[in-house]
Image (tube, rainbow, N blue to C red; front, side, top):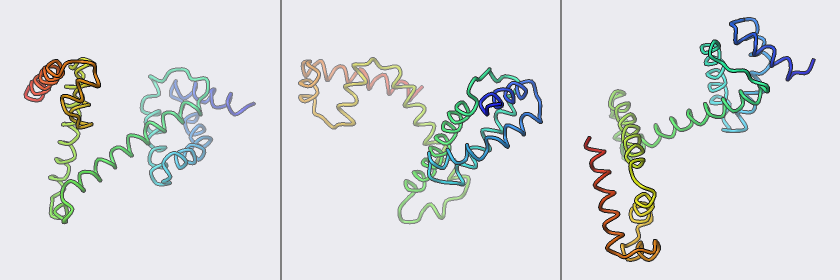
Length: 184
């Protein structure tokens, strides 16, 4: 029997709560997934951690799993998403350490203060994302040109085929929306 078919049958048994099927699938795919994870992130510990999380999650949610034809490909995609979340979390922690102060202030920061800093950065990013979703495409475009590319209103007007006054008013209206969303 092909490994693809074997994995599919184990998956179907797993979906109905068969622990033996879960452990057989784990034994068959754990190392191939860890090796795939290492190729994705170049870190064996992170790849192992993410693979463990994948298997833990599929067991916890086995009752709500859908049918899957190619189990290994499905688990690779799941693993890649887990890895990206882990790497993003690590990046945020590194950014928080960096932003806490290059002169070593972060070493004096308590664990609770450090966690609050990381979470507040995440909250601000979430608020910004939600606020930007309230803007029109044109407003987002002009905000990007003004604040991320540093263009003047004249340059923005020229690039967007608008008058300077229209560009200014569009950006002003967008900033009002952003301020309102952040103060809500």
